[in-house]
Length: 162
Image 1 (cartoon, rainbow, N blue to C red):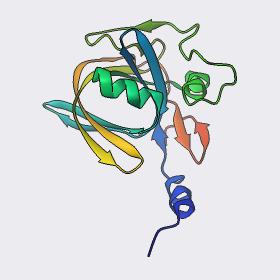
Image 2 (cartoon, one colour; image 1 turned 90 degrees about the vertical axis):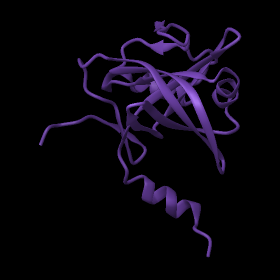
Image 3 (tube, rainbow, N blue to C red; image 1 turned 135 degrees about the vertical axis):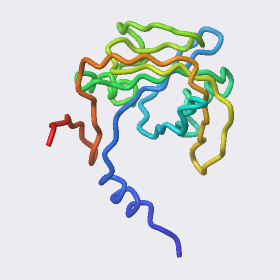
Image 4 (spheres, rainbow, N blue to C red; image 1 turned 180 degrees about the vertical axis):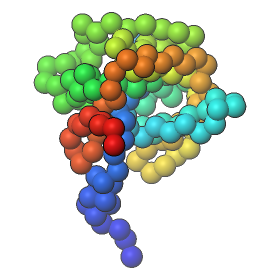
């Protein structure tokens, strides 16, 4: 019996997740994409995973560079999430007008985020239409000044304390 992909999509819409932008640079070319498939695996050694669609430009550059930056977006950055998800018409250069910084690896990180992780890939795993990247965190910074951007049921949400 084969699972209908639409049934899986419907079920996964019940999962709320923070929103990140994964960015990389290779031979001077920067690219990035919005990602919510991100997980912390270990604090010691500092290890995370991300999953990227295999045919994407970010995936291609990340496979070559083996480094990436991950910016955890604040509630005020829904427009940046849309831009890096390819939902902003005319945004050929996703970095246009945005301030970026680098830490150790040289991968760009987006100003205004809640936190940054600067990472190097230690392993990959083919996962159907995606690649699971296992990465060592070289440096981490947090800017605990904003509310997080949350994605649930194809919409952005904020948090309220219960």
